[in-house]
Image (cartoon, rainbow, N blue to C red; front, top):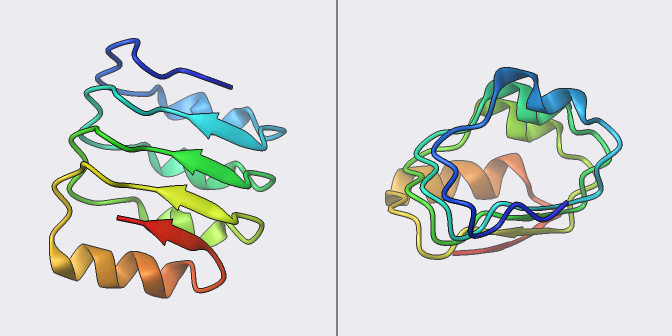
Length: 96
């Protein structure tokens, strides 16, 4: 699913109900947070979040066991959050 460049400011909490998604592109939006329900996307393999306004990610990201690529460049993530993300997703290529 490609929702890039549509000026999204937030996602609805029930977005996690789209549990068959494998690829999700939310790049180039104005997202400052993500719902915890996103962690219910158990089949998600690729998530593009670059160039948003994210300073943290939900704890539910630890559920992304199949994720192979997470793109986060262009977000104001502090160093502590970067370390947390790396720990939550040890088998995923994370691009900052």
